[in-house]
Every structure is written in C-alpha cells, then in structure tokens.
Image 1 (spheres, rainbow, N blue to C red):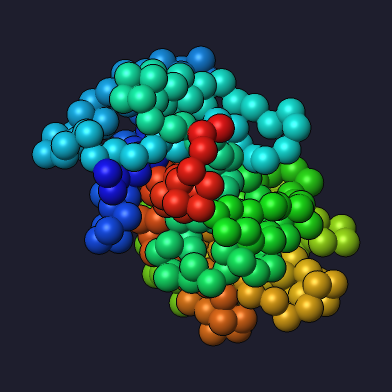
Image 2: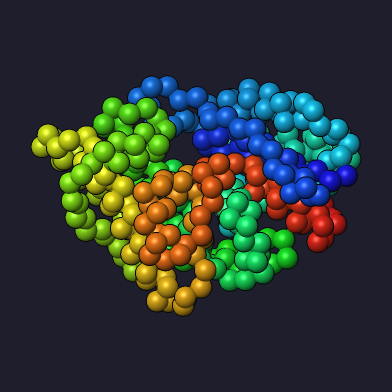
Length: 316
C-alpha cells in the first residue's frame, strides 16, 4: 500500500491527487468551477453544487488505472486556514466524500487546512523537504487569501502564525476585477499576465502598507482611472501587476527586518505569475512552486497525508 489520496474542494477548483510514496510520482486531476461570463466568482451554494457534480468524475479519472487497495490513507482540506472559526461550505463536499471513502476502504483519514496544502505543494514542487523541520516565511497569495505566515515545520506538517495580511482586497480579487475591467475572461490571471508583457512603458507605483499589512483596493481605483484616461490596456495590466508585486515586496522586506533572513516560500495562484516570480527570485532567492502546484490543488494534501501516515500511523 503505497498510494496516498488528497482531496481539495476550494472556492475555485475541484481537485484530487494521488501521491506514490515509493516512486515519488504525483498524479493530479482537477477542474475549475464554472463561472458565468462577466461574474467575479461563485456564491458558496453554487460552489457546493458544482463540486458535488465534478468530484466523482475527477476521482473516477484519477483511479481509472489504479488498484484502490494500494491507497494507504486519505487526506482532505476541511477549512481555509488552521485557525478557530475558519470555515467555508465548499470544503464540506470534499470532507464528506473523504469520510465516505475512508469508511468504505477502511483506511485512515487526515484533515488539513487548504493553506497547509498550498504550502506543502510548493515545498514538494520546489524539492525543499528540508523546510518541514525549519522555520520560514510563507506567503499565500490567491483570490481568497493574501497573507504571510511564520511557518514552523514539524516532521509532517506545520504550525502557522499569521504575520501579515491584506486589510481589504485579496491580490487575486484585484487581478480579476481589473481583468474584467479590461475585457478579459474570469479567472483573469494568465490573460492579464500575457497582456502586461506587451507593455513597454516605465511604471512607478506607490503601495500602501500599515505596519506589515497591505491595502489593495486602491489599485482597482487607480486602474479604473487609467482606463478612463484612455491608457493602453497593456499598460493598465502591467500597472496592476507592478502594484501587487511592489506591495508584496514591501511586506516581505518588513517581515525580514522583524524575523531575520530566514527562507521565504510563495504559494497560491497569484504566485504562478512569471513576472512576479522572476522579480522575486532575482531579488530575494525566494522559493516558488511550479505553476501546476501554485494554483488550488490537492497535491499538497496528498503529500501531507503521505508524511503524516509514515510518521504518526494514526488517523484523525
């Protein structure tokens, strides 16, 4: 029994993954939740409905050529963050499915937070297992979260202490709002990046921080003003990404001043943006996941499940 199943039903993506503890191979099957044109995401009730419709198909594809008796344990994301009161209904779809599979297959079930899964996926992708036993700064930048935590690794997981956050919009929300403003399709991240790369004008931005926390609602207003002034779409797209890049960079500089020169990890869909990734890799030697492991995924959950099973040997 060498396989470990991960399930994640976030507000953006239905995701399943299998990790092979012998070969180190990770197989993923995932699908974005459908969003009507012009809309900025889904209501939780709609997300629950779509996860229910998609999860069984993805799981069937995942195990099509797999002997399910080889699955040793199941892991699932049951909440957004590892703090009291962290809850979103969409995660109940994955959690209930995992409970059914655990009972049917008579194998352990482990519960993690969505954020832990993002961090674990990034470490797996970057081949940085050494950080599972060290202290590091982890940024989780996505449509649903914009924050930095001080992560203290243990033999299979992490303790996470909030160190910085957004005071209004999340970075992914800002990107999607400005993307729709420019006529792009939701989710707008990849198309906004393509548009921004066409810009050749110099850009100056002045981000707003309160201590280590950021404010991102202003970039939406600034980009609206650029559109009203008739600035090229590619300039506005580049301005948006530059503003977010500089905001995160300032947050990072202040956290380094407070916590010292410890490793820095980036996870979340926004951090799959190559413009931001290249800038931070050059400036800070930061650790990034490959794009397939940056966006919402169950791979990190599957990997945490493997680590916990082999270290603890008990269910939750």
